[in-house]
Length: 538
Image 1 (cartoon, rainbow, N blue to C red):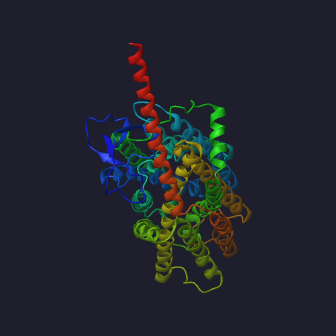
Image 2: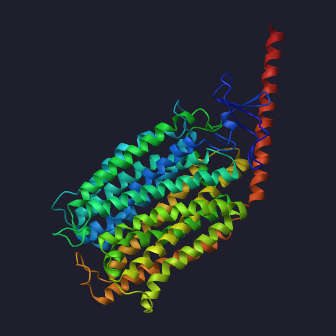
Image 3: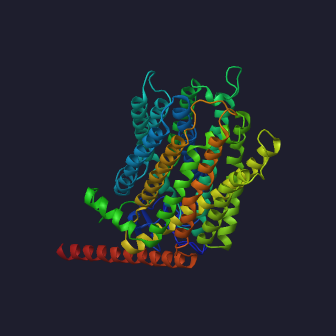
């Protein structure tokens, strides 16, 4: 599989596109007769990525959200409200495990950036992930009986460390793979958009299945979430489904391996010194640093709200499990609409105003329901209007959360190009890994904030909905609303400092294109000189 100059190449991409010339070596690209090694190629495709490839890649995001929802939506409620683990210890366990695990993210990113094998840079790690992730998710919800506070704390911490570290083997290379699919400004948005859409599909599906078949109302449990025995079976189902999809995504993108960028010849093997040099290099990029800090603050908000979401739905809004399950539809409807809105916005606006507009909307939606309830201008519990208002609010939140996610991931791919321009290295792995590091670390802080806050308000364990004291329910709302919304307020200020525009990105792409061709010319001249010397010697 090779490349040739095409008159139909999109204006915002490198003028290199695919051909099916079987005579062209698979490890190179060709421009006007000059071969360019894959170590000098920024992406597998210069323009549109074939639909089957985009689908196979984005399918992997469904697995990621299946594991994410199975972990983050239920573990805190399970350990604190059913097993009786202290909120502070539960929050501390998640925080410690996520922070320790977050260290593995840049390590995996740096190692995969340098990995040389027949399976390429990303796929060996993606193949290694499914089995340990599946096993650890199951055991997370199947602790041995009779464990006390310390025993539950150790079990929770260890299970999450193993699960998240194994998950990193798929998550970081998978994100990096997405950035390597196309160099086109708009196609990157479409790739990340489909990735986000299928991620939403996975989240929606597993949440709906959980609330409909595992935590449904029964004669024994008026609230199915109180059924302790349902959690291990749910975990086993989610593990098998998510692990199978992980493997399928890696398997059906394997034909890309020969087309993807490879480590440059002068890139040194992995070592701790090289690892810290990589971290220093990416941190020196102003645009990347700005996005990372913004991600950190936003993740603190989403981590806190995600941690106590089941507490809020059960005790603050007093929704039934049948009502809660329909929020799975919002997880699907919102991203589906957001996918198309983002594409339209990116054709009209740069990514920065799109990101900021989405964040402001998310901030408003995070504090409005609870604030209106506190002010006495929100529908009462157990009324149909309450469910419809909450459902509509969550759909809009998901729409703009999708706009933000697609835009920010697409922006990270653009920054990887800027980094290559400055350093002559393609290092998507370390870029997306460092982003994942801050997201996990701050999400862990969100768990800790929620856990400590629940202990401070002395929220009861295992209480039936409607029996908790009003002042404690009020305090729970303050945690989910105004308190959790503080970090996202500051994140908006950091995203405002992002400076990479569409015009600048086009300049970077043009410069990189010229560099690839210049390198090819130098390589060609060197080979001709070597051949001439060999002829003279003969």
